[in-house]
Image (cartoon, rainbow, N blue to C red; front, side, top):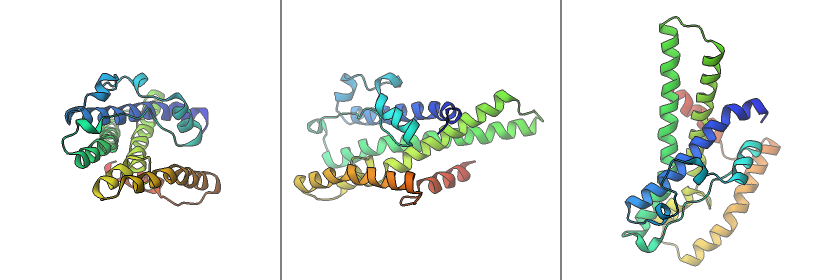
Amino acid sequence: MDWQQIVYYLPGVLLGLTVHEFFHAFAAWKLGDNTAKEQGRLTLNPIKHIDIIGLLFIVFAGFGWAKPVQFNPENLKHLRRDKAIIAAAGPLSNFVLGVILALSIRFLFYFHISNDLEFGEIAFHSFLILYSAASVNFGLFIFNLLPVPPLDGSHIVFSGLNLSYSTEEKIRKIGLPVLFLIIIIQNYFNITIIPINHAINWLMGLFM
């Protein structure tokens, strides 16, 4: 990713990660756990959510992470269900944000066309930033729903399965290395294992 692409994608990355972690914290709080709130995570301030190393990985390697939101399972009334809700809240917030951004692009485009307005430099760059932000959020939605630890999708799947704690731990230990291996193969050997980009393009086309 060159510097111009970084400028276009960075606002969407910061927004997407912040909203994602905020809604993890919000869901936990609404379900009766104040851990994230007490840690200052119930906020849309990106400083509270962004992990610098994870952000650099996203910018330069195409994948990364934010600071994980913590919760206390003992404060949840329906443990398996509530864990799934907390896990799903982050990716679903990215999906909703992606839809809003994509529809905003569509509206602004038709507004320019219908009013016979020229696409000046500011408008052009604004469209690119919005487009990048929409695609980033759809990407976060799809990627985080993969059922591979430590992604949110794995927590949702584990909540629906009656696995022992030891079995879940064994799966978690191999999950991260497997995930890194998949990403490395896709990025550096140009082999599509998980068609995330195809799914992003499909969603962008659907809403734009």
